[in-house]
Image 1 (cartoon, rainbow, N blue to C red):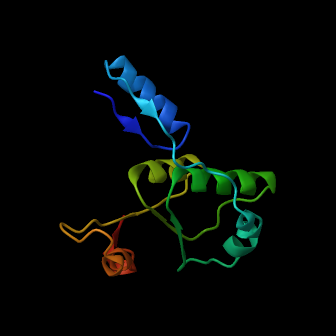
Image 2: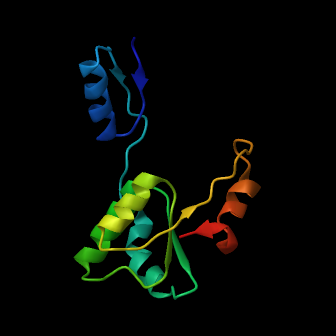
Length: 130
């Protein structure tokens, strides 16, 4: 089999290697790359406004990594607020950056792809579990 692997690096290379070791002929074609956004400089100021009833919603491992590196460069810690991780890998990344406790949104049994209303409803505080 020849799979086309479109994951961003470095995950693309790792997946291609694993596929090749399993006897496949993968084609590497990373469609995305992650770079620090201009808004990263605003992160400490934005985080400082958060309190006990507020949440940080982390959507990717690179986002957590960029944020954590920026905070460490400034000698700052993650704020004492709630954290929601979208995906298990993102949750593990949050936990690894200094014991940040997080919740994962409950996933409904069935929903339509791209149903923005359903996505937003999943993130209401009464739908989260610890």
